[in-house]
Image (cartoon, rainbow, N blue to C red):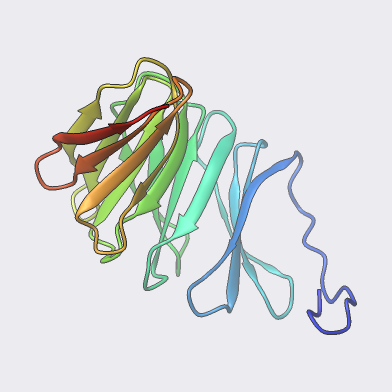
Length: 182
């Protein structure tokens, strides 16, 4: 859509099911969509053409996002995994395995060196983007996690849960600093 005129410029339609998320790349030249059809797709924002279909999840892709510099894509899925992809080639780099329930959220740290996942298994996990290795597990909620985010400086992690609480964690140690309830 043109923000000034309200006229539709392009229509992206190549998923076979509902979309769960859509985001711009940091430079605004690409769009990333995630779908219940088990795929994520990278699109050219100018032409509307599909650049890459990111295939490999066994169940719905719940969210997808670009790394801060735009060279990587991170996807989360109901299949209990998250995946790291090369945004330029569409090649899968790592499958992040360790959660035992659906992964509801996956985000990059502000410096792009870490990935954070939140799951229905009541835990958040911190991953090394370069190796795909799990560095820390932040466990302490009593129900499924609905989201997780880094603080702007990357020093803290904030998790949100169906248990009605949010928790602040030290990203370096994985220690819970505060439970926000009430």
